[in-house]
Image (cartoon, rainbow, N blue to C red; front, top):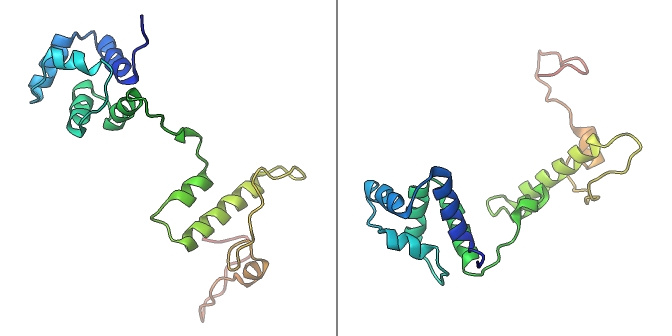
Amino acid sequence: MATKHQLAQLIDSVKAANRWSDIQLAAIAEKKGYAVSKSNIARLRKPMVSIKGETILMLADILGVSPSQVAIAAVESMGIALPAYSTITPEAAVRLDVDLSERDKRSILAMLTELRDSSTAPGAPSQASSPEKIKGSVHDPEMRRRRQPPQVPGVDPPAEGHGA
């Protein structure tokens, strides 16, 4: 028997887990307000070249899975390979985030590096790649020296090691 494509596998695994037939799945779709026949469901398990967004949303709703699960399975069923994002590093995620300013990206990357460096056992090499020292960041030795709590007139500064 030929290997089923990813969308067919998803549909069949949900059907098997719930012990549903195509007829029962079509009845669930009808109860949810979708006009889907058992033959339409069977057709979705055949090789496909395209799928509408509304079909992805409908399938997700009647199968009880996320739309992204159905969309990924559908795209892969069409022979389109998706990149494996499960191996993305925090640094890569920060660099790819279009909502962060360049300054914020530099700050977050510096913080990640500092956290990794400080969590390394004494004497052991750091797991993080050596970052460029960013002027004005926590890696800038001058900024570390200048980092003092603000002085408030009439209030004694907290003792060393005791903070908020």
